[in-house]
Length: 335
Image 1 (cartoon, rainbow, N blue to C red):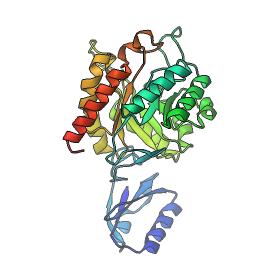
Image 2 (image 1 turned 135 degrees about the horizontal axis):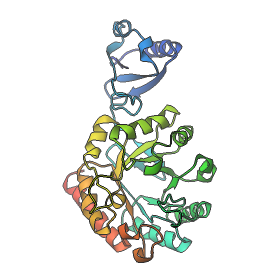
Image 3 (image 1 turned 120 degrees about the vertical axis):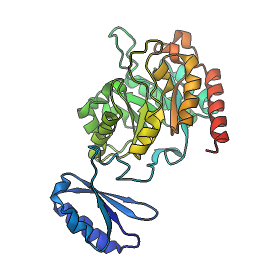
Image 4 (image 1 turned 90 degrees about the vertical axis):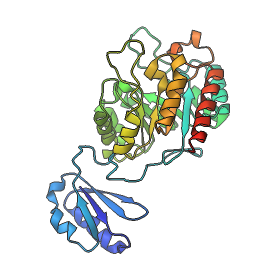
């Protein structure tokens, strides 16, 4: 349920209403817009008499929310959420960011050289895998804690916020200085992990599972938000279909649909979606045109010898071309 407060209502009256709702055992999410204030009720809203509330002097209207996700719902929060990453970087609300870097951190020289090159091309955040979930137990699993340290060295060198994936809630202490914690597709419904991330205030980049619906993605975001952390970025990274020519099928319809359903920013990962470096550019352009708030692109200085996902990684020169093309298209669209 949401309660729409009339414009210019007295602050004390609004506070009294919020206190009354909380005394009914419900939480209240307050969203202050340009023209009115919306109170989103969290919990069993059936405890509240909608007719009683709608008759109050300060109430413009009461609406029931049928979707199971509440805090992630745009009805709760009509304006776009803007996630402050730090170092002057923000995602959402009309800004556009590119997150770039290697699939896996392999060495200090590798990650630092890539960081310098992608920053020069316009990337605002550095991605890099320290803990790597791999389908085969015999594949490279990442440098783990050492990988995070190397990412932090690259951050010192370039000033770029870092994004890296968490695999286990027990690893959270290692992520103290990580700017954005990524939840990978395989962990999208690891609900115990999501609950722990809800207790932090770090930005979370939540990837859609390879066989999950948009509704399930938003419900996973709801798990994190229910714990008190509203700093969530949704990521479309392709889903598994019957198509075999690409690694996954990039669901670009998810971009406008998620932005219609939710106030959370949406980024697209064309690298994992296609699994082929030559398809990254057209899909990056298409994602930007579809209204994505950003892109996540894998870049490696020697893809042929990458320890992970070399086939989908761009060289720094290729990334520079993609970034210039995307920024030129955004400019042409007047965005």
